[in-house]
Length: 238
Image (cartoon, rainbow, N blue to C red; front, top):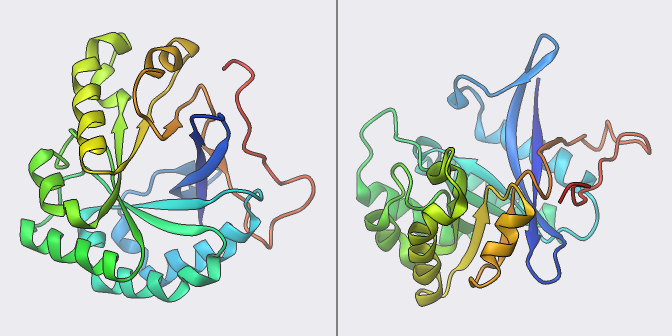
């Protein structure tokens, strides 16, 4: 069985949940785990799960995003299938996040670019996930620039055990790139009030992180009941 888990995305001013990133998880025994092979799930399965999950989300969210590895991203069937169901999710809009993961096969820059154009033409916003990490370096970002609406910068990919101040150079670079290219800019990996205070001087549109909200199980419409609805709220420790 597969389900989505979701982590809320917060606007900066006011600090409130405005979107949700969806993570696909598979139930093995009594545990929900990261699937070993995402290719085992067809575009139709993903689309059906979106149709079952998004209408059950708390009211007021503007968008949801799903992560696609390069193999899924360039697959026309994924784009065509999600294009067919995106209007059924309204007023919540659907976005796709191109992950920084390396492909398991040879995929050219031109294939990625043509796929990005396909998503753009389908009316589905494209998010560059984890910019500056893995495969999502500046060269790829520039290639896809006409089709990208949002950059996401993952603090956790740079910080490890270091303080946020130690990665300001990387953060500043991508913040400036987003501003120059008129992209939305999201920072993920917010872990404390100190992180929030340090980011106050940057042009950031949205925030994600454990300090604001952990990923939670998202019930489908069929599972939804008064006792199963999980609201997206700020952590008591934030």
